[in-house]
Image 1 (cartoon, helix red, strand yellow):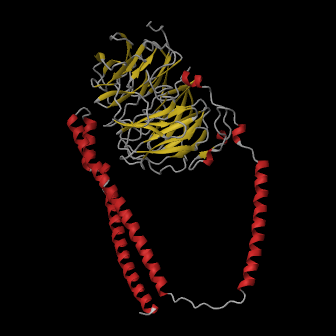
Image 2: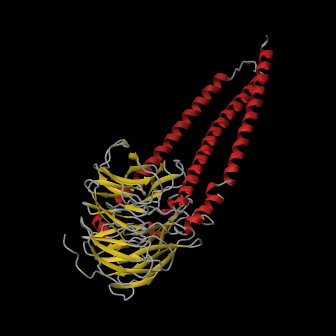
Length: 595
């Protein structure tokens, strides 16, 4: 066989292989496109059956049979979604393999068609090699000189910002440097953050500085009456709708509000209740043209804001995130993407040492959907971002210091996950959650209190590394477990409140139930403690003040006169409550009871 005949045979074989690979690639891509089209046109969250069940549930919120049918549909949709993901992943690998075979076959066929050139003598080869070597030496010398000059200029003329920034101050960078962020001159130079003692003395995030619902000062109002005005320092109309709770720093109180068309941040004077300013959050880079459709029970401004004493931060259900200065100017804004959440995004913001923490859980249990993001509060720049293998959740993260580490504690089915505050590295995880996780974690007495909604409360020691699922719990309780509200603890006792209004007291040491009391009314706000008083606000506006004790002792029962869905803020002996239509400032009027 001649070389020419061998080349011709190789060409025919390679060409046949290319045709087969091409046909296979077209078939796989067509299947993937069909799957993509049918998946987008059959969105399970827009299923008429599911929408009808949700409508029935809104009319009968306590009908367990409707809830069970919704859960069954949810499991069915999850299984369908996972199958689509598996088919998509398999199709992708098959398409990649087909493409590689196609390219290799076409290249082989092209090479087989080429006629190799016959070698010819080149009398100039020696001289040409000498000329090329001399030119190469000159190019290297010139390039080296340019690099040395440039590096010398940089070393002499540029100073590191690390040497010029005061200790504790955020980097003085422009917010515009963050992807998708819109900045202002206010973000270019930010003063050092207030000391941690000032942070702990205020109410800078959902349920206070630690996220546990504990007031820094022991005194707080005992009695008030919304009808007569007794005990109420001021009452102001809420200028924008929302279910988020108030946050307080000094003489400023912040809330957010939104409709489908408009998003706003509002600042009130804590002494007078006067509206200081109202700032629209608009022209956010990357913001969607239309807001998602969400449940009326969640609304468009469900997450509670956060502040570090220099900026106030707000996030909305369309993914818009903004930082506003204390005088009402937008420092920066960006959009994180519209979260895929059947009820709307409601996880509140957390803040610690200038880091804004966004738990952006959404969709199904895939890492590419949910993520935890740490953002520089001064500039809006992402410090780090970690994917999370969890589905949608509504619990708010907390920051604790345990086992010698600063940990971010997050909840999302099926995991409790601890992340390092500095770089977001995962420290440990425990697979102990199920259901729709709404209650937030609490850290008390060296233990994490974790709620598996309507099922059990678990006490977990936040130590170890890796998967600690098999690590024994300190204890678990299974009586009167809440589904919406978060627990509160003074370090010795733990108090929970179910949405049906049952208050329960547990011993923090062993989880033993000490007492329970039925308020016989719906309760959505989470309880709070100031000194030796437990505050439980019911949805109808009734607030029950009980003694923090191993026995139930009611101290007062106060009527506000309007519905309340938000949790209170307690600062400097004053309590601030967001009602459905008004903000209330309550002044302390009696000393707290002794221990």
